[in-house]
Amino acid sequence: MSGGAVDPSTREATARDSARSTARDGAAATIDLVELPVVVTHHDPQHGVATYAAQIAATVEARTGRHLALDVADLLDVPDVDGGFGAGPADTVDVGVPRAHLQFTDRLWGPSPAAAADVVEHLADTTALTVTLHDLPQPSDGERNLRRRGEAYGRVVAAARGVVVNSDHERSLLREWVGFDGPVEVIPLPVDRHPLPPERTGPDGQTGPDGLPESDGDVAVIGFFYPGKGHAEVVAAVAGLAAARHDAAGDRGGSGATRPDARATGVVALGRASSGHEAELQQLADEAAALGVPFGATGYLDDATLLDRARRASVPVAAHQHVSASGSIATWIAAGRRSLVPDTRYSREMAALRPGTLTLYPDGGLATAIATALADPASTWLDDDARTLPGLDEVADAYAAWWAEGVRW
Image (cartoon, rainbow, N blue to C red; front, side):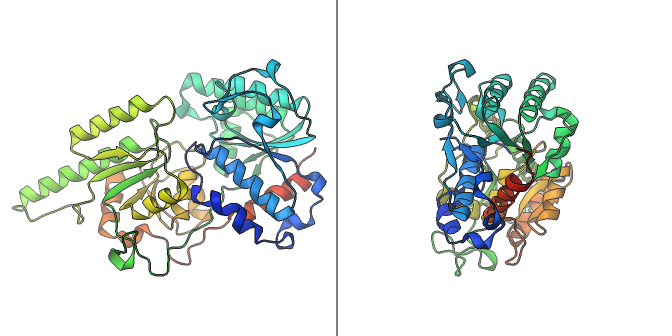
């Protein structure tokens, strides 16, 4: 999972909604609470993995009645600088806890893969750890980073008493590029869908085709911007559609149009640039302008605003080709949208887990998929009975059961 949003609109609702569930409703009711580790959280509301850790902690707490969240600043007396640690293990002061669970991506736990692994190994010297891995190493990291990240993730899993990934695809990446063949639990990322209001209107009271919210005319990508996330591919696809439209108009005396909705010419990044990639975001904006494609990035959006923008996008897209697990896909589903997603090992797995929630397109097929979505806006929305489970409650119960029964502490 990348540093983009993980169903961010659930963060404020998590404690409220989960508190309505009593312990007898889930597997957590039968678990000896002594078996539960603290769940380490990071104070970074804009980082998807940090948000996810807080969601899991809050939901398990609500279902067990035991306070579990422990901020990393209280576990390690190390300053948190730009999502990483500014000091090494020698400078840490530990808070004694017998068991802890970490949501791990190297970019959140250290300024380098090796430094992140140093912190985890230091913790493991005094605390029994379990970990959920995100952003698994894979060839798209490049030869040097693949080696560095693979070594770091190998050290992390060696230090842990139990390992979780969010998909079978990630379990395969762990075997293929980290060389780990030990036991791995697969617990999918949760989706808690937020239904449209009964009147199915947009924020201005207007409705579009089939009573859906009025679209804003943009093809949208959710989450942090960084090269390879798919923004550039979306810009190129929209530029190609514009060229085809103009060619068709010339061939048919100006009567033709490839895209039935002529307003849907823009591309928008619903989020901000990942740290260190601001210049590349500006470069893409310049390239889009040269192609005649309006392009912009919203910057960080709070939960309510992101949900609103996700519902008003003309075409929802999650175009990352090298994803390990996608919080962006989960966010689109939570908003009630059926996004366009490349046909990959991971996306096929997610389409099988939640049937009817994704539209897969083949390699080279993004422009056609966008044109089809523009011609049929209803195809970008979930059916009312679309299967979106597991949600946060089910995922929290899966963690609690695994900690109690599946981990050799």
